[in-house]
Length: 250
Image (cartoon, rainbow, N blue to C red; front, top):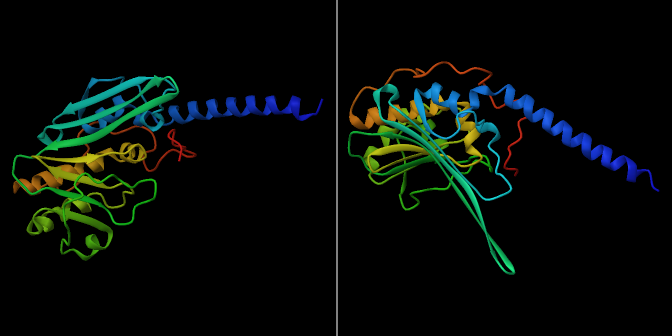
């Protein structure tokens, strides 16, 4: 028999073992990315879901499942909620299998003021970090800040309010995933599957962005600097884990 018949299974098994080992090492070195640690970092409490889940490695089981994680609290003295809903449902119709996937993930902060709807994104995001616009009907406008207008797309129902968003946008400087929406008395960060790890890596910065926006819209003075409302995260939070590979593929 050809040599590859004996060698190939060994190679496959070795690759599988290597993948499992690297995954365990990655999860061990990113404990700041667990649901429980995220809640602590943001000054929130886990009210639903498994606090041990590592959000850098949020896999999709090869079966029907439904997952919901909710964190709530009042960091900066403001009502804040983080919610993740994920699931898959397969239905057999004799010759056809219908697969329905569910995904929704948002960081939401309450604003005690009325303001026009708005949406903020990067003008040229990474191809894997393109958010799905929630308010595509809003007209794009300029904020009056050349640096902001060069890098960010700001769409708002009343252009006269655009300049008030500048401080909040600056709070996200350096982030590769940017999607902020204001509507119905809340400001929020909707997250895609690919955007989730980037959020988890810098969750405090995203929360600070919402707090600055909320304070500005309320006519209050926002915090001068980012102040983590929870305990400092453990592990290296300067970037995604070394050799990190998204469980969602490309």
